[in-house]
Amino acid sequence: MGQLTGPTDPTADAHWEHNHPRKGFFTDTSICIGCKACEVACKEWNHNPQDGNLELLGSSYDNTGSLGASTWRHVAFIEQGQERIAEARESGRALVSLGMPRIGPPAPPSVADLADADTTPPDTADFRWLMSSDVCKHCTHAGCLDVCPTGALFRTEFGTVVVQDDVCNGCGTCVAGCPFGVIERRSNGTVKVAASREEQHAKHADVPNAGVAQKCTLCYDRLVADETPACAKACPTTSIKFGDHDDMVETAKERVATLHGQGMTEARLYGANENDGVGGTGSVFLLLDEPEVYGLPPDPRVPTADLPKMYRRAGMAVAGMAVAAAVAFLGGRE
Image 1 (cartoon, rainbow, N blue to C red):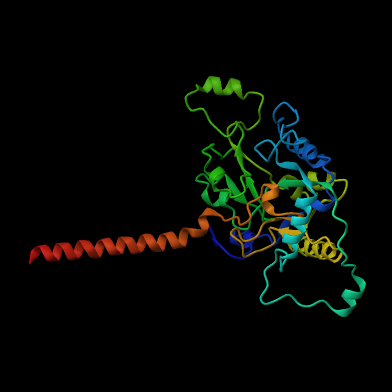
Image 2: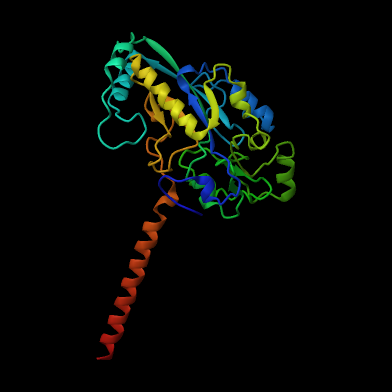
């Protein structure tokens, strides 16, 4: 299983002999226009079936709602008024490390930096849209991977996590193990055990991989061919960037610093902290508000991170029961 918490190289933990750099996404929500080209490209390349009846949701100008077994890229539409925009700028201004851990206070800006940067806050708009293309995080410590009982999920040589359709038995353990709610079984998240085999086959005859867990593979079949993932290639604004994970983190940090220099203090990073509860994510995001606004957990934590502590406590409990039994036995002989 490898290391369960903290910074690590997930490819090395998987004992791959190939020396490939870890790959990942940097999704810059500040330049996303909500065109959903990434959603379409993802579905076309991966032959994913349609979600729902393509009608707009009552809560948003959206027709998919969230990530799922058949939607591996999802663009959220979030409406905000002037008051919420001001709150986002204040909460962003309160951040020190912009999502990246460091020891001690931040280094003061140089005189040259202050002279070149225009730190005058821009006028707060009366209304704005937040567009955000969400995707599987391909966590450094992936809960779905750690809890899978069949080995259907595996860590690729690029540090990503992929489901093997022909190995998955549809148990759904991985669904509960994902702190982001990304992975799902392709049959509305349930498997009707009472239905006969013939009924199940008839119901899902036109749906590929029905009943098994599905999620983004970061276009593993394209990576092995040295190709860019379909969503990143289709993005018209370069909101979705793809490359070596370390380069993506550096690009994200530079972009946040640029926006802060322009007075947009609401900008912050998500997934770039390798000391968080999942060891950092392969998919890094630039957000313009709190993670909860985008439906993201503020402090994600993989469930297997607490296994060592649980084992220690269980061992102490067993030892205590053994001592108590021994005392009771010896005391009864007197």
